Length: 369
Image (tube, rainbow, N blue to C red; front, top):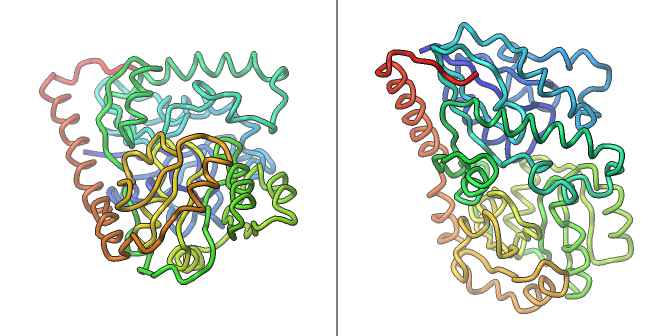
């Protein structure tokens, strides 16, 4: 079986890219097709020799302003020539599910989330783009997105939360395969620092602003690790508060920060969210908003705690009453090990093999393209 891999873009480091790194290791000889690629950022995980970039990569400063290229991604993925492959395995938050493939092939698509411009447009672009200017364009992207979601032979959701969205917005069922956690990246700590930590891309829907306000209300120290479009506004908000903005931090530094934190904070509703499991791998609990994927990765009172309302007062109350002594670092580590990469890869291989076998047994009939 000749396999090709597809991912939206490889010009940043985040949860989706960490998951795709495991997919790439699962098929080490498969080429990788993606819209954009930055070797300085992604080269260590995805060597340039494996990567096939779209025509958008020729646009000056494309990696820096990649979000502005949203109208062009559908065409970029539709023009990839995948006729030589028996199986396409993609990982997507929006675009990669739209690749075209021959009727004799299969396409198994790992969905990190349903496209946020489809179900949470205002939250996703809040403060970044004037809504009145792009609403007609977004409506066209929504139509494309719904049609593209019909292409893959099989959809896999990273959580039950995302599987429910797939059913709601695309009308399709999906297997559920939880994201893997890079257990070996983290050493177990005991939370000797006097701070809480948020580790996240800085996007409006992540609700980092809520965490900053809550930390001030509770009078606790907060560190925020990460970069993104909302960074400038968040830095302005954090001035003179109990919050310190760290910007980009390396994996080594993040391990150190997590293992010494009192707890990690997930202030917004995540599709799945790797941070609670990464924190557990480092022996630390998580305080999260009670919703979304956190409900699948945090056991209340055992590996973390929840706050109920999406406001600073609710989170501040959880921070004030949080008792870190209730959480055992080794127990947290064992919880994270349930999401080890080896189990993810084994299950993914089985799903792809099953879909391919069913295709052969059906005589290689038509596949939606």
